[in-house]
Image (cartoon, rainbow, N blue to C red; front, side, top):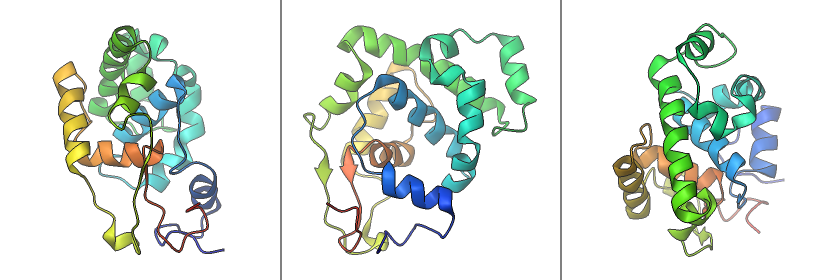
Length: 183
């Protein structure tokens, strides 16, 4: 089986690529999960985050945005002391802050799904890249989404993070032309 060239031999990476990456996600809790994980990944490898994902799910209350939005200093300190996640104060505080904004967006649009997928009229952008080198780190659309999220009060949502988020939730399909997941 031919996969996108960025996939290593690590089973976690293969499973993520084969079963999740580039597949449309419309569940708000899953959309919040990827928002937290992409923010946590900033400056690190995605494989590092994937290996910690199950523990993140446990300590972040199943990525329930209502619960995360109400984390207090005691909970944040417990997260900072938890070696099972990326212990970066800015990233943890960002998850709490972004949860609050996420909830406001849900109220305004009826769901985060309606908001985020509205940028592509509910349909994934299907790209036609021959190789991983052709895939951009960001686009005009990720710039627009990033600016809107930041205007609403989110952080750790720069254009590069947003583009990776768009790939993760299937808003864009960047599987290369030779990848078996392309279809």
